[in-house]
Image (cartoon, rainbow, N blue to C red; front, side, top):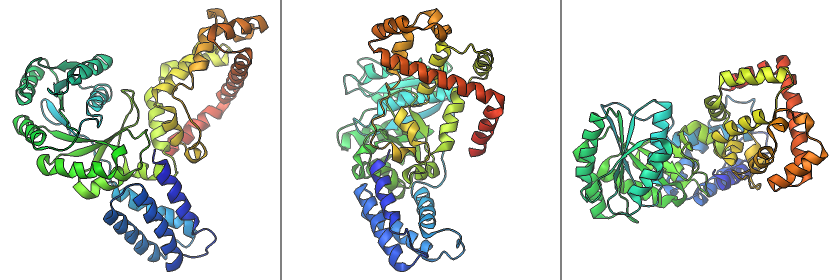
Length: 442
């Protein structure tokens, strides 16, 4: 996420290394590189210039933080200004109304339909809402089918009217259906085009007037950079939308949209999409994103994701098994499943301070656990529950059944034994210390 921007900003701060104080000369050199990094990230030129001028004023005006070296001071100032540039405060979604109506807008290919499903899943699971998805894209042949597939995947009802080419009428009928079936959130997926045109704008404006949504969200493909910002301005002039959604942040994103859009349309970024899975949705926190851009990680979000998957009853069961030396591969497999639910692996690694930079050239596959899972599934129930019985002949059979080799089976056995020992050591008080440390990070 924003790897190129992070690398270039890191190089910019190296200019200040070795200097004992901040001067106009070394600040100018650093900010020249910062501005270049922002422009390369497809940030609007005026925004980049204003940003660096503000940082320069604050850097030269600093005379109280004398205990920090220039590099640290500059990073702090840039972090604070990046946070402000992206909106400053976290802005949540408006769920008032009975039902709450959320209108999704954006160009075709921005990920609007997929994100509608992610948002429905998020509201259903985290806000305990009864959600109705509505298909108002009457032009793209596969749009309603795609929405139905998404709805089936997350267990949310999809309202559509086959053959009806009037999206305003469909939206109005969907609201009546929602009220009659006890749904308290209605998410309306609208049609997009390959470019902004008058027909699309008139249509979505008519839907907006007819249903008066509590929340209108504009979905942006973050990989399109400054073009996305210009499109957002066109939509905002017509819809006066409430917030922005950035999709595909797990891809090769330069960062221009995230850094520019708030300044151009003066609307907050509310959500981000970080992968293909329905769980790959996060509330947008400008301060946390600024830290990630600057390579500081995002420990708070990492802890939050871990806590979402934390099951106290399961944890107590595991603790008892560890204490009795009964922790087996079935238990290990459950731990892997919980980690996978937290999100894609590269995103998780990027949340660990310093790890993102270290692992930037390493291809972390979402199927990283595939080989491990195959080996475990090739074991018999008795082998999974009592790993100590796995001898040389059993290893050969397991390797053959999982499409791996004995060396890989041995490696997994070794890692499993090391992890089991570490978990047992933590039972003696180390685990409490770790939990206290993680809570202190929040």
